[in-house]
Length: 264
Image 1 (cartoon, rainbow, N blue to C red):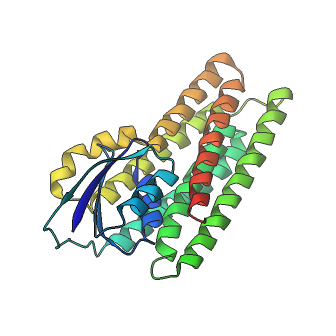
Image 2 (cartoon, rainbow, N blue to C red; image 1 turned 180 degrees about the vertical axis):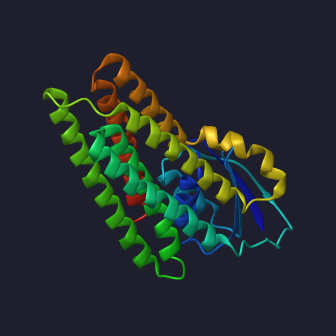
């Protein structure tokens, strides 16, 4: 058996990990995948088909690059029997906060919260695809990915249109306190998700849990909305909220295109 190590420069959190798992699940020669998210490395244990594996990783546009391949006698891999339970946990947390942020964003008239809610929904899609495609056919998996990707893009485009309307109109200034408070709770929720997922790793990796939280795109987005809320208050303007909303909508669309790649 061969062991190939890849550097994945854009693998920031478990969302990208699940995208890679889904993409590579169609390659039967793969025996095991070992993810090192903090160091952005993936170790693939496989029997041949290295070109197919490498091409599949490159197609995700996550900055994947093969660094080494060597023979290994390792054949025993520890399976995580709690994987489905962990995925269900993070899916529920992300989906609940999608509802919370979307509803409070509409009430507070904050595009930052609305955009962040779509980012939470995007993560829910990825975890959902991982769960519902288990044991299913490749065609079923691709169909789910296509529906999720296009739905996400549609919501993001609607969000962009609303940003433009508010930018050129005389829209009411969003409630900065709601933006900050809800984003703090979302920040905590993302931290909990990352902690839950790390429970599936070895105890030797416990010391890197905190660093993972701060390298996550989701956490950066939460902090961005918090900063936008502060600026809305200081400047008495809705422009910071619209700017962070636009940035997050771009990230949501990028994530949607990654999901769509799984349907090809």
